[in-house]
Image (cartoon, rainbow, N blue to C red; front, side, top):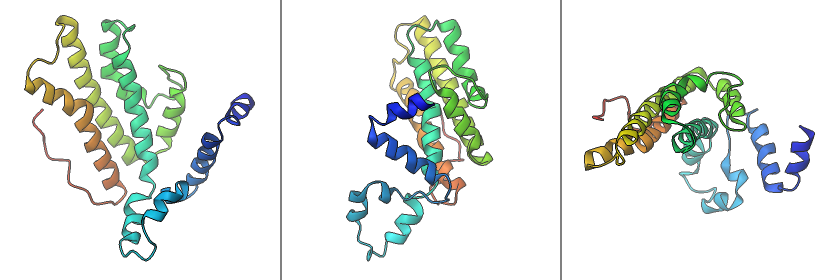
Length: 195
């Protein structure tokens, strides 16, 4: 722990971000404009939209979105790992959504820290992240399996659309759902999409 702190001294911007992160966990609002003064200067305090922007852009979901991203990034690391045999990769992608709730589990260095933070999120956010992770993991596993049998897993435009839905579209749906879970109004993502 002490060695990590000493190492952080060589990266002052990261140390400042870490302190701000810890302080932000104690409040309900994370004001990004305090992290980046240039952002604050872009909008005058006299701007009648300022309060609306404060309400919807600088609030706690930034933490949920960060944890969401890190969970999906962890799964993407597995998909991209060329040293992992397909027999291990496919089931790991399909079960990854369960792993993000297993305290202490790690695939790569420090993923257990992501899990600890994930488990501190409100239950509703955990459900959203778990659901999107499950869908994405199954989609990734399908394409990994196809590419193991055939050099080209994406041949048609329909295949390309389906893959993009799994690795990008679900991200947008998850972020929208996270914002909705804390009271921001964004378009409904609960309607069924043809995948």
